[in-house]
Length: 314
Image 1: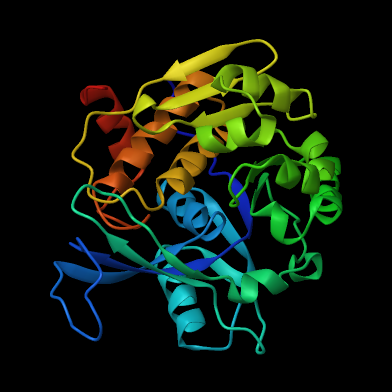
Image 2: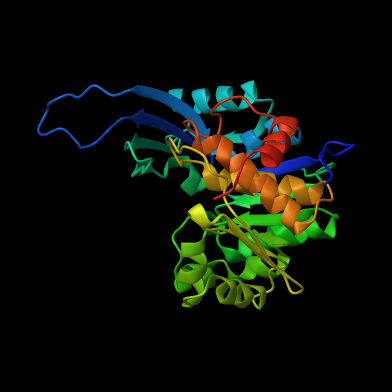
């Protein structure tokens, strides 16, 4: 297995950027106006673009974030969290009439995490918010449903015409209507990064591989789907690869999908095989699952590669 890229890739992380507030140790919501002590509360950068941007930067990529935030404390905090990780946030447009997208996430002792969410400025993100993509090797579009299929297709087609590879991570739950809404973007997508429930919901199938193959028929080059404790399943026109999840003690699964996306995208950009890239994605997701948010713990590419070779799978 190749464990590093001789030249760092440059990735444009485009789309949904969110500020997450995690509260750990919540078993129930207090009645009335009562309070409750929790184990910890912390903030983290998140979103199908923002979370992936952070992880990609940690793994050694040069990352530019493109999206929208509000002119508020949450937006300034989100920018700062990304900048601390080396992400170029010059492409985050400020929409003063909208608040920054944010989530409040109560984390249960078993790792489950329901959420309260405000769409905010993500709902106002448009293609003019994406600046010049010169020098970009890969474009990762998180949340194409916010701009719609035609606009997303226009962006991805332009990227491909410039020699840039592309990937999509859909934020919304799987639904045939949602798949139709983003249909125009799919023929310009090299890698689609859904979870298993989205694949089944998009396609109406009951089998993950069958559903992934149906998505290939929509023009997608590769489907790399996360499947919880099962790990990940990668389907292309030529192969089906299953990679198991790693055996870890889960603290919080928030951001695991974004982390997998970052690992898989970086692996493919660095020339790794589909199986190696999926294993890298699962290994990065395992780091995130052991803490709170995509910035949990301390990891880089070398650390994750060592983890992947030394940690048993489920």
